Structures are given as structure tokens and as C-alpha cells.
Image (cartoon, rainbow, N blue to C red):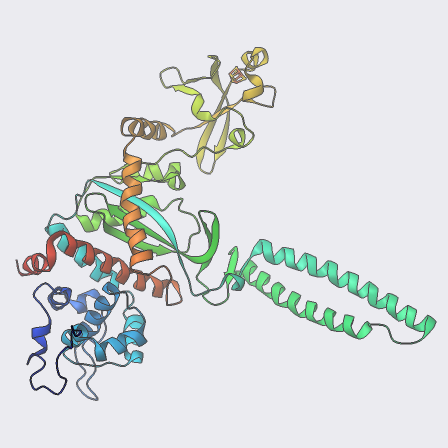
Length: 477
Ligand code: SF4
């Protein structure tokens, strides 16, 4: 039996007569077309929405935006590859009505309109909100590092620079001494020492030291702790056990369908303090005045939890097991029970610790509780402290943390819901969508890039949930 032979290429009317015939009713490009056509691009901040009166006609920003959304949904992000798709891909040809912008025009559009993409992302969230695709009850917040266009070797921390300069000084002193010794030896016995090679080494180290010194001075001038040479806004940051140079991407994910309610990119190396701004922005787009939010221990900061309460956010953030006592292997503070009626702590041996000393942590009043006499007699003391007695500190506003701990005790499953909810978008974006690294440099540019990434993720998710025609019908409603 012969193989399938296909159709004769010289056959007339091999192809359907209209490009539209190639694009089925459930093709996502039909939704992209309808969605972008319904946007107010001028209000979103896109440039050149009105065509120029004179000169060569330019591309409509709506067409360029459609191409970008199509590209991000289909794992094509580079301007050169988008140009290729506009020539050979029937869906892109349909979407652009056979327009063929070159890669410079495509790249310039993304750069110039980088701030407007966030508005488009939010417009889609609002559309999905109208379709009840957001539960608007519980948000899972998390951050991840996405790689920047900056190699690790091109990032320098203050500590690394200072260390290099110290070591260079030691090496230079050693080489100078060897050079002097060589000169003396040459004079004594005649002949050539290896002074020439040493002089070369000294010049190379001096040169490198001068460059490191200049970078350190730049850090002193800016007050920053690190400097990146390729993308100055990128920062070395740790995620899990690895350190890399990138940006901190924050997501607020609605736990009902794991859709992204809010996203932000920053270059802060840790998540502390980012809970309230991320959730507040999500609340605005979701149109709610109160919401619950769950995050991991990395967000545990009393000022942030306090700000959450003030903003109508019911926060769930587990307390990190940290502090000097824990590091040294002594009883963690969680083992001491606070009695709010009597304002005392009951320690693991059952002794009562009373408020005795006062101090400050940042702007918060700190009270320290202890009972010297009880500790002196205590059989558990070797497990509790290495000092003569144990002090337990409590911040003036720590009742907020106690309330949060009680909420977490009542809903232990909520931490699993957080993990499941945030893993889906991060995993999809990094693995399936292959968007684990930024293509552009600079904070404003990568913010624009990630708005497109998050929009593409949400579009794919919404299509899975209600289909292309369901989304188009919502636009018409
Ligand atoms: S050492 Fe002091 S604080 Fe610690 S368990 Fe004993 S009595 Fe309690």
C-alpha cells in the first residue's frame, strides 16, 4: 500500500479562496481581534493612535498590539520572530490582514508603549471579572525571580567589590616585595630576574582594582548595595538555593480559577513589604473593598500585616521560625503562650514571664518579658537559653500577629491552596510558555514585557474555561 500522497501543488484552487476560511470560529485570533478592537487605546496610553496627517502612513497600534498578544500567547516574543510569523503564519496573516511590519517597527512599538500594556492586562481582568472567572474572595500572593539580560559575572555586590579590593591590595604588596627582592638579587649576582612578568601582573591587577574601585564609588554615590553592568536595574537575588541576576515578579492569583488578578515587577531582592501594595492593586481591578490574601513566610512583616488590616485585607502569612534563640537551638518563641488578659507569657516550664524592659524595633515599641528567679531554678534552662535568664520580646502591636495566627490555626488548608494557586501560573509561564527570562533591559521595559506575559496567561486560562466564543460573546454583551 502506498503512503498518503497529499494534493498536487499545481492543482488549481488548492487553497480556499479567502484567508478567513483558514481561521475557524474557535481560533484564539478571533478573540484577540475582537478584544483589541474594543479597547480605547488612546486612553490606555498607546502612541500614534490617530494617524499622522502627512508623511508615510504608519502601522495602526491596534494591529501591532494584536501581533504582540498573538505572539505571547504562542510563545513567540522576539521582534525578529514576530516579523517572520507575519510573513508565513496564516493566523498572523489573518490577524494583520497581510500587513508585514519589519522587526525594527515591531520592537519599537513594544519599547514606546511599554507602560500601556499594564492597562490592557487590567482591561482583560475586568472582562473576566464580568464573566465571574474571578472568585474575588481569596488571593494567593507570591514572587519569583525571572532572569534579566545580565550575566552573573556582570553583577557586583558591595561585599564582593570590597573583598576583591582587599585581596588585590594584598597581592600587589606581595608582588611589589618580590619585585624589590628580584632587583636586589639582580644587582648582587647579575643576570635577569622575572621582573618583567611581575610588572605585567602588577599592571593587570592595578587596572582591575581601579575598575572595581570605580564601581564601589558608584555604589557609594547611589546608596545601592549592588551594581549590574548590562542591565543596571537588575539585581542579584536568591530563589530557593540559587542566586541569579533578575527581577522580582509579584503575582496576586485568584484561587478560584488560578487567574492572575495583579502582577508587578520590581528589583527588590526580598518579598518583605510587598503584600499590601500587590493585593491593594488587585482589589482595585477586581472591584472589591475586602478580600483575603495568603502568602508565604517571606512576607511576614508586622508593618505590612498592619497595613493589610487597614486596607480591608484579611492576611494569612505564617510566622517564620527565625531569631537568635532558634538559630542557637533554644526554644522558639512560639512555645511561649501569651495571655492577653494578664499581659504575661507562660513559658514551656509553666513559669509566668512579666513585662520588665522596653525597647524599639524600627518604629514599634518592644516589651521584654522575663522572670529571673524562675529561670535560675529551671530544669529546662539548657534548652531555653545560654544566658542567666530568658527574655521574650513582644511588639506593642503584636496582637495583629496573634489574630493572624489564630486565623491560620482555624484554616490550615489555606497554605496548600496558596501553593497550588501560585504554582500554576509560575509553572505555566516559565515552563510551558517558555518565558523564564526577560528579553529587554530596564525596569520599565520588563514591566511592559511581563504585562504581556500575564495577559497571555490569562487569555489562555479564560479560553480553557469558557472558550473563544464565550469570550467573544462577553465582548458583545
Ligand atoms: S529557662 Fe526560664 S523561660 Fe526558659 S523554660 Fe525555664 S523558666 Fe521558662
